[in-house]
Each structure stands twice: as structure tokens, then as C-alpha cells.
Image (cartoon, rainbow, N blue to C red; front, side, top):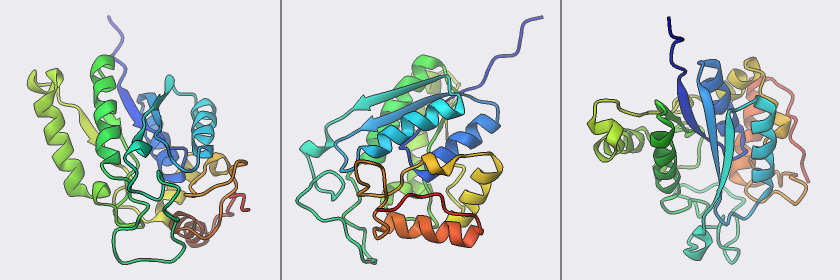
Length: 227
């Protein structure tokens, strides 16, 4: 009797709190995880170092880092050093939004998923405690999944690839509590938009504020190293 097929997933990992939690959930659900990170010209490269440590620590099947040049387009405080990272809250889509970032990332994840014959792509997008990015909304994810299964060999042959967003409806408090139960070492993660070369967080940017408050609300000690 042949062994049951192993479920495979491509998991997007930035090195931040949310993506590390999404990876832990995928592993807990029994997926063999192939992890994809991107060096896209972002302001803080320490998150990539964090991603490498997280992937190693969590025992994934493979971890690849793909170099992109989104800084050639700019248009975001994360890829254009002439635009300051805001330290005040804004009601509009903030300048830390990177144009088309999740679409580019998931398209490349989709290609690898087809090659691997993976069933799912996991991405740690969140539509509750987040910065208002349009490519983190449920409507966007549903549209991308529909497109993915129109555009792939697997999809048209009746083996659709699912886009899994286990964090999309959770608060930052709930995300941290979930990851804590699954043993995520949050001291390895870097969420700050402008972390220094040692991976220490600024404590002032939008991402830092959400992360800090999340640990307070979860009543879990914050392991973040601050500048």
C-alpha cells in the first residue's frame, strides 16, 4: 500500500511577525513548507536575515530568497530612501505601501507552487490590525485565487491551488496568541520598517506601533529589541 501524498505549500516569509505565524500554522496543518522570501530593494534588509533564521529554526523543506528590483520604480517609503517613513498615523493608504508588491510576490509563489505540485500558497496578510494596504483585503485574495486557477495548468486541469490567509480576520493580539501556542520564537522576527543593521526596531513606525500594542493586548512579554 503506497504512502499518502504529502501536502505541499509555498509560504511567503518576510521575516516579520505575521508571516512567521502563517508559516507556523501551515506546518501545524501538516504541510511540507517551501518558503519564499524577497530581497526587493526594501529599506531594512535585516528582515531577510530574520527570515533565514526563522526558516532554519522551524525546519522547512526549502527556503529561497529571490532578488527583485522594486526600488527601480520607487513610489514607496520602503523602496525609496528620499521618502521618509511616517511616524504618525494616517487615515489614507500610507507611503509605506509598495505598489503591486503582493501581486508580484504571489505570482512568483504561484510559479514555484506549480513546479512543486503544491496545493496551497500561504500568505500572512491581515485585514484587521494593518495599515490599510489594498493588497491585504479578502476581495483581493479571492480575485487573485480566481486568476491563479484560470492561468495555470493545474487550475485548468481541475487541481486548483488555494491561497491560504489564516491571519486575515485576526487581530494582532490573536495572531500573537496563536503563534505563541505554536511555539513561534518572536524574538527572531523583525517587523520594523526602518530597523537598524542589528535588527533593532525604531519603536515609532506604524508596524512597530501595531506590534507593540499586540503584545500588550495579548499579555505576552514583548521580545522585540528596540534601538
